[in-house]
Length: 68
Image (cartoon, rainbow, N blue to C red; front, side, top):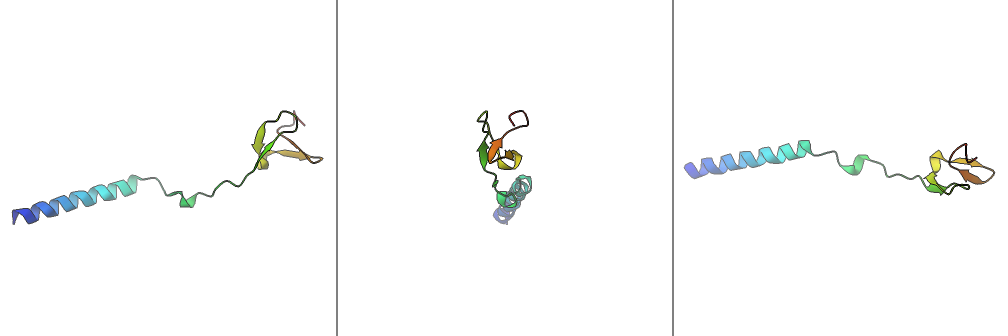
């Protein structure tokens, strides 16, 4: 009867560690969407910036109003 108790105690402790790891683990990466922004180079200073932050004028790309 002693070996059965020992096995049950070990299984309970193991299950506790598994559950603890699961709840402490950060969320899976499946919720995050991959970035689809292209990087564009400024026509003046050649700094690369995301497409959604770029200033487009006359077919050219600018990183800021200063370069525009």
